[in-house]
Length: 271
Image 1 (cartoon, rainbow, N blue to C red):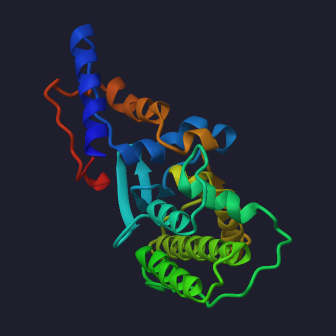
Image 2 (image 1 turned 180 degrees about the horizontal axis):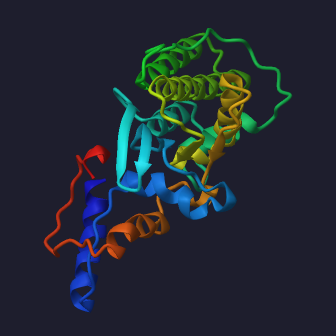
């Protein structure tokens, strides 16, 4: 990741200097958080809104009150949901799709819906009732269970399918619980939230999208929350989201010197 960021940063600084154009630094997760304001149309989220950012590098639950004002409600204590998806996909020996191992796991879960699969023990429920995420417990549990099944000669297609579906259901349920907790947290503080934005590469997962819709209805059938996702092609990292996130600073004549450096550890609360 540092290497990729350095290439992009150096290219941007070189172009800006050569063309005598202003340079505007952008927080990567701000780009994900604001994409739905560009693409939402009639469903454009209104501040304040909750935003769930789920990707290979991050799992963040934020309260957004302005384009440059975010409060972290929950983050992961270990690895991101995207990394957990990737690790379990590799453990299951799935063939990658063009979008990587995490997408391969989602597609694998969708295939052969009528296949009879064995039942497996329930996966962990880490940090229940807390506004915090932990995903390493899920993939560690799956790793140990797979090793056991391999020793017993049970690691065949139906078992792989059962493991993949159980894992996907469990990690998405983990997201559901924390989203509901965040909405309850806002209510307790009289913060009126009607919009929930979900972005990042994992937000293109169709099972996740359907479950989050259902969990909002289950939490409060009368609230009519507006659940907003960017188009799938704009969920993963893209230039559009970075350009859009830069606009409020650019239009306010807030630019950065060409000596701008990378900030690999930059809390979104410090914008």
